[in-house]
Length: 278
Image (cartoon, rainbow, N blue to C red):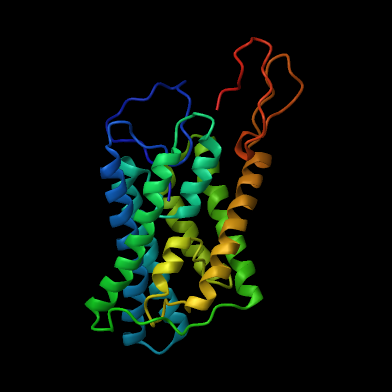
């Protein structure tokens, strides 16, 4: 979902902070792609598997959702802590796209080449995770979900859930608090299970993967495009909120404030450096 600092790497107090998801330069791209694939696969396996387990243990829908959300919180937190130092622990195309958008002028973060590797890895991992969960519980390996999620209120829930996730991740980066990402991001997703009508998919790859299982956590293939569309809208809303709430200071000698996160042109400051610190 977001980046964490490699263990044991000293960082000067005044060092500029990388954008969320920025990856260690020593990690080969194949390692980062593997981390994104495996991490997304395990995340979906946790979501789908805990949903299947919950329905086997109780018929109470509230308890089923509680078990599902609790397992997801713990699983996601562990995955971010483990794989964040390798790939940034995105496990989510909207996070990867948002980071690419904010760093496309050459700053630290996902490049266009890395973007084309991360996204397929995340989607393939999500599908593999759903199949793995079904296999562990003796369900058909691939069975399209019949769980319709096309209602307008559910689509609104996805906008809210995704906007909040992007605001959280990029807000942590802007305020130099990415070290809290494993606990904070996982906690947000757990809360969003309950306060959003859609139970907070907030992830196009996970949405696609969950279409492959006709179990508690599934989503009908016909509902997938609508969910993904709302997630992309939510990402834009989230970046806009970051630009407003975590506004960068004015450049010396310049009375304009730049919304870097929205990719707006950066006016050259008075000292002639040509750009503001990111």
